[in-house]
Image (tube, rainbow, N blue to C red; front, side):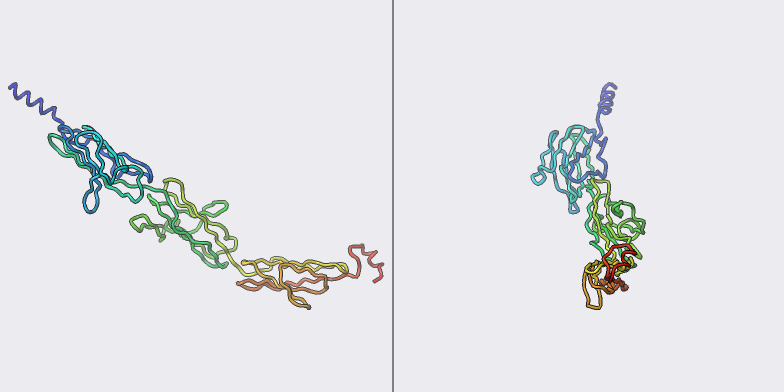
Length: 325
């Protein structure tokens, strides 16, 4: 009976080889930062060997190992990128400066002296900040036409892409379309519900200006780039001509009150010929007609006349009437 009691007590003191905690799976790390994976466990005995692997489609690659407890011996190809240590209750593996190209699955395999083997895989997902990879260039559209501004971005997690209008940075109240994953989840195009492509219809000259694309996924700083929208339209008269009277020997400068985009060229016509320029300075009496042209059309004619007075101006009416011509 005494021997049976002793054997029973020994069996109660024997530990089971099992994990007590494991790293989160997947484990998230920001690009450029380091992370330590930690496993805790109980062992039936003590550590004989602990091995760390990278799991690939073709199998597994040894990162390093510890015979017994202590620091792991890292394989030459991974020195400087990994480090770790093992005790009889905990194993740690540290990865240094993770990059977005490193989509890792790491495995711990631990064998104790008496019984049982521990094995556990952890996927490491590297998050990185948004960057804009494609953007519409400076866009010119004829007034009344339609245009679509497109913005493409990458990031992990997927960035939220929004359009705002400068300089007030107000949201653009337009139908915006969604982004879908391509290229292993890291490249985005724009078919149907979020702000990525911005369709603008029936454009007016008041829509011209700078539009900003912002891509933000909560990692690092948002990425921004700007697009200039240029609205072109034919020349239009935006004022009235002004007749003028000057004293003999005087001159007057006429302006042509028109607007257009591209900036129109202006031609002046008179009985003496044709002249080019935004303004016309003359001291000859007569009427002058200005016409504005750009690639989209021609303005209406504007006629302005210059009268050369026989009197020296200015003077009051009574005195002027008394002056001999």
